[in-house]
Image (cartoon, rainbow, N blue to C red; front, side, top):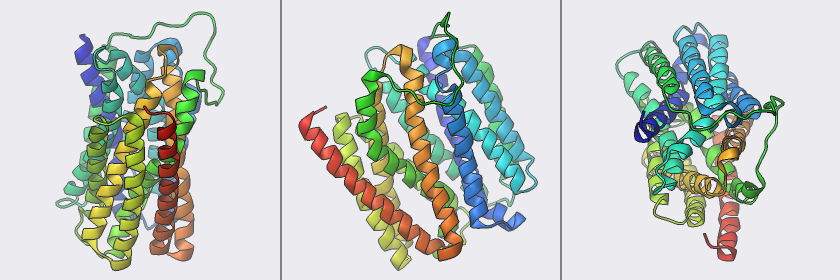
Amino acid sequence: MSQKSSFGILALATTSLMAAASAPSPIYPLYRERWHFSVTVLTVIFAVYVVGLLGALLTVGSLSDHIGRRPVLVAGFVLAGVSTAVFWAATGPISLLVARLIQGVASGTAMSVLAAALLDNAPRSRPHLATTVTAVGTSVGMAGGGAFVGLLMQWTTRPDLIVFPLLTTIFVGLAIASWALPETRSVRTGRRPSFRPRVRLSAEARSEFWAAAPTTIAGWAATGLFLALMPSLVRDEFQLRFEAAGGLTVAVLYVAVTVGGLWSVRLRARTATVYGAASMAVGAVALAVALAGTSSVEFGAGSVVMGLGVGLTFNGNLRSVGAVTSPESRSETFAAVYVLSYASLSVPTLVAGLAAPAIGLGATSYAFIAFLALLSGAAVIHGASRRMQVPA
């Protein structure tokens, strides 16, 4: 198989994995009506995905650096297919918990190796293409999964019986295709890989990793808000009974993330992160104003501005970190990036879910948005001062 074909399969795999991650979000309000569970249970279902993902990243995130890319990719896609099959057969919130946990393990197993394998197969003349595809493929997948399911909800009350069989079939095909990929990482002899939970950063990547941390936290916390709570918020606070509204809310954010990711290619990496942090701060203010006035138009505009910022920072950060990693440490470095990212996505969202029953979904959303605005503002100051010191 040619390097170009391998790169295309890996890009499709990244997009499909993320589409599966966002596909359940628009269906959550239907699940709540069908099985009568609370917002707190909903956020636990959302958070357990991240528990599985972080557990996999911490234990097998660097495994492909030791045993090769192909076997880890195949294992990830087999698990992803099992998770969508459990969603397909779900009979209650316990089934959803199990499905999301397996889905998290699948994503954690596959994500860092996908990022590393894309970098392995990127054209030598365009090394930034790999991190751009990782960032843009992530946002396109998240947007596509949410939009597709949201539109399905317009004409069927059981979108789960369509989307999850489709995703299961796709993952079976990706597992087979992954086994046919040429191996780009030779097996290490001698020292065995350790499966103790840990995060390791190579010495050359540490400075860029920690410099990227503030915008990573803000951007992924914003996506957690949209994936876990926005479909219910749109339904309850804006009184929108248009069934596709929840899914399209997620899609609008991720379309903007995609545009931001593509825009960042034209900018220096650190410039992209500063612009992105500023955009997230403005977007947070716009979302708060929209909630106060229950304006769906302003809410859409705030979502777009927020998404642009997330895309700019995500791609800029991946480029900065990817540029200083060696082939021997790529998957463990990207595993560390994703550990921070998904911890940022899950912890604030889980706190919000626990707070919602006590203070209400609207008040919880205001508090969450204020947190995003403060963190993004701090990231602007940090990023701007660093860019003036060390332009890049």
